[in-house]
Image (cartoon, rainbow, N blue to C red):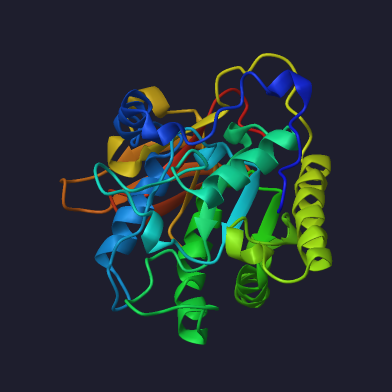
Length: 309
């Protein structure tokens, strides 16, 4: 019988996993799905739901309790488990979900003193798998997840560590590194094991080794990403759709990309002739005026203060 590692004494009274079974907590999460730090990510989810590669078509939403676009640590798992899908309400990917894997992950984070606001959860294959699919991800599933991950990395610029929770995510990240080498240069990949109970099958020695490795991976991530000090202040940046940029954003430092090039600098002008037209953003880059045309729903990162990273 496996016994969970005891939580540190100061955590015992406050750590209560599976909060999503509490209707009030679930309602609070559903009402915040379009909060500033998760709106761009959940917009990506909606895009992926509409562009399903021939399966159920659904992708869980990002949970507001996690870091969203401000996250510094990515917990990457293979694919969402249909058995854990919510029967009522919105489908949300959360460490507070009512299942054993979520509880195990929440426990690992708590033991390593990693706050849920520092992490973002995602799957190598973000959609629910086709009916009857089991075992490791197929080559087609791995390839299908590369482009969505590339889009996710552009939305979460402060990521510094990714915990690869299983062999599937490890193989996926290796492919991603080849396809988007520049997107992952700032991110340290940390091999680990899935938090799912089945990952602890095998001999007692194998189980103990996997349990130890899961904890070690979390501690490595904690070492790479420094613990935030002092009270949490306002976010250094916000995400605004191009069509919603107004006079209040002029002279503010922004970062915007059309998929091919990225502009970073003070916003000088945002022009859109009519709602259905592209938005032309004029930005000062290295003392020169640069213009970029983007779709109205393109997310623009607007910095507070100097806008320096």
